[in-house]
Length: 204
Image (cartoon, rainbow, N blue to C red; front, side, top):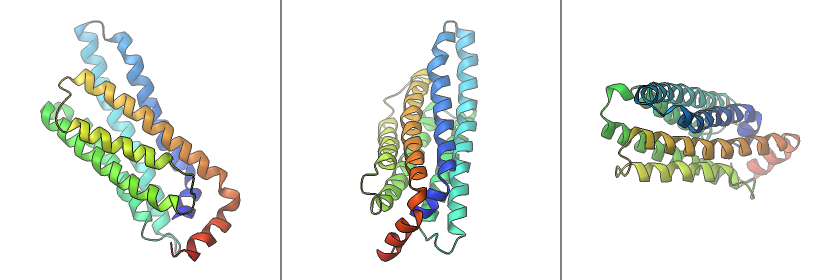
């Protein structure tokens, strides 16, 4: 599993970059929220952009999972990457369908997707931590997703603009964590064979 992540660190880095792009756009959009028309246009554009970036980020994770599962040493845990990517893609697809959905249902569907993403990433972090004891980036990202889902589900947020700010904050937090993980994995490339031997010895 660890070798899969190390060999595909750049796909995780792309996912982090996509998340940070959305966060930057979300935070900069407040400057065009002065009038009702500009606010409506900016919000609609942000919804579409977020959905597309989420799908792109999920696709990167899916590719990493498939590449890992197709190798003899990939292991069943590579499918955790695949399902994490699927959950992120579903997250993006739900957002793209926002004009067709009631706000309450949109918030609840986003909450469910965020909880699923958080659980899968926490499981991945647990597996990764067995071989890299000081690794915590993925656990932080998973915890953030899980907490966002728990916060959204009771419908504390009643306005689309507030939802956008929360999604932007989450995207920034998650993007930084995933980028940190990606570059941490990149730094381990020189010792990938030694780490893989350690994983095999532990039955991973």
